[in-house]
Image (cartoon, rainbow, N blue to C red; front, side, top):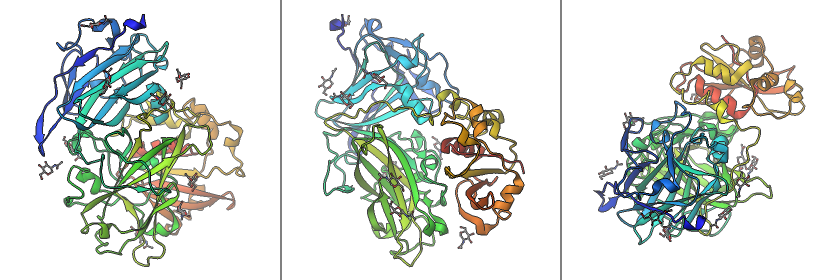
Length: 559
Ligand SMILES: *[C@@H]1O[C@H](CO)[C@@H](O)[C@H](O)[C@H]1NC(C)=O
Ligand SMILES: *[C@@H]1O[C@H](CO)[C@@H](O)[C@H](O)[C@H]1NC(C)=O
Ligand SMILES: *[C@@H]1O[C@H](CO)[C@@H](O)[C@H](O)[C@H]1NC(C)=O
Ligand SMILES: *[C@@H]1O[C@H](CO)[C@@H](O)[C@H](O)[C@H]1NC(C)=O
Ligand SMILES: *[C@@H]1O[C@H](CO)[C@@H](O)[C@H](O)[C@H]1NC(C)=O
Ligand SMILES: *[C@@H]1O[C@H](CO)[C@@H](O)[C@H](O)[C@H]1NC(C)=O
Ligand SMILES: *[C@@H]1O[C@H](CO)[C@@H](O)[C@H](O)[C@H]1NC(C)=O
Ligand SMILES: *[C@@H]1O[C@H](CO)[C@@H](O)[C@H](O)[C@H]1NC(C)=O
Ligand SMILES: *[C@@H]1O[C@H](CO)[C@@H](O)[C@H](O)[C@H]1NC(C)=O
């Protein structure tokens, strides 16, 4: 029966061709399962429907059908997530006639849900494009759960060679179904990522190059120290840039200075490289810089090379000349820059630069498919000038191996939140209803008014408290587990531990406010106490997200 399942070719002629720097560009936004073109308020774009196109074969209904998620989370944009195309019999191919050869973004949008009675746990499928294997036996549900998100956007970068066609084939795994909510195809400047300037190899003299035979997957794109940048505020390529907060390792968040002036783009760093908003904000170490490493930790699939692009721009007014700030950059604990000097690399403040590094992430003999990729910075201890280090933005890409980018689905550890629980925390960025917060922090939350205090315990074995009696359960499962883990502190204890929030006890400050070092239990236990400053740009929602993410003991006080 399967032998008759020939793939279909859907020719979509919605490409808008415009002339920018002499190269025609492609913008396809396809809302799968939708019958008409629709304007999306959330991203201010028109998305074409894939259903009633006259280029669709008339027998489309025998190999696929359109459907709606049984329940769409209110925080998720209606378009393209409120419709889907489902394939449960055989392979299905979309064919996009791109206007020219060259590198393209292919973005696939997935909202895992029950579709027409098909449960999301039963969806496993493979996706290939122009001969590259992008996803194998992929479960959007497992990936979304791992990332603690309600929807998944997979961004691939594919170099279309002379065929001028980009095809995308969905193949369900045996006894499973495939689905897709939206497909985007956008072209990019020829040398932005492919055949760009030579990268540095971490721990190796040489390694793979990114050329027209490589497929890339963007795994992280972050605006360090700044806010989320949506696709519309990108440089015309609809990339979204996320906040870096949740990837910071440890309690040291540093400072987040901003820059009010325009960014001075150059030939080496043209204006499409990254939006001004990326370079106009950064995360720096502040004057406690000698005491810690500014460190981020990124879970990635092992067994692949990754390209890390660091975006740097000096925006701190006090640093004016070469040699003022020298810092070390470590990738996976290897020194990749001994004396990074951003002013030396550029023409001065406000001039951006990016640096590429390629690193192999092995599985370290472990059986887990995910490994952490570490990025850290520290002032050059030999420099007796300003001790600081900073980063403005980061992009991380996975490189294909023999045309394959697939990895096994992530294994959900008990520490991963279930999406059902997360739905209580997400989407309320602006004004979180307190009921949602109470739901997440459960019994831990006593009261919330203007000041929040968070106690972070290093989970030392020698510390005897209630949590040692619970096994490692998921925060997501029940709030009763959360309650068991909680030790309650009185305000008096916290004040004593920090000598009444004495500035001498302050070990750093971040987006939320100051972090204090304190001693508890007759000075046998060292704690970090984070105090949310009510004037902080980040509100209670982000603060609570951090609590949940760090999986730490917490107590929130009413002052
Ligand atoms: C669907 O129709 C196309 C032509 O319109 C034909 O080539 C293909 O074999 C048909 N597929 C099935 C499964 O009937
Ligand atoms: C997709 O395109 C590639 C090359 O561009 C081609 O080899 C492959 O056969 C195409 N697949 C389908 C299903 O059309
Ligand atoms: C992003 O772009 C929108 C218009 O598309 C604008 O209203 C908004 O202010 C921009 N956001 C930032 C942070 O600049
Ligand atoms: C980059 O500069 C060119 C002119 O030099 C301009 O046309 C284009 O809109 C700019 N792009 C962005 C993203 O600012
Ligand atoms: C550290 O910086 C903060 C503000 O950035 C300032 O208030 C404080 O006095 C500085 N401390 C030292 C020791 O320079
Ligand atoms: C880097 O160092 C940290 C401890 O600082 C360690 O946990 C981690 O495993 C190291 N990473 C690698 C890739 O060696
Ligand atoms: C910073 O990281 C590097 C590389 O992992 C390590 O050698 C160094 O000891 C760390 N420094 C601090 C202060 O943690
Ligand atoms: C790609 O890699 C995945 C996971 O390693 C594997 O299951 C799959 O068979 C590979 N696909 C191809 C076409 O080699
Ligand atoms: C697909 O992935 C799931 C979960 O990761 C696994 O249980 C299943 O055996 C895989 N199926 C195939 C055909 O590899």
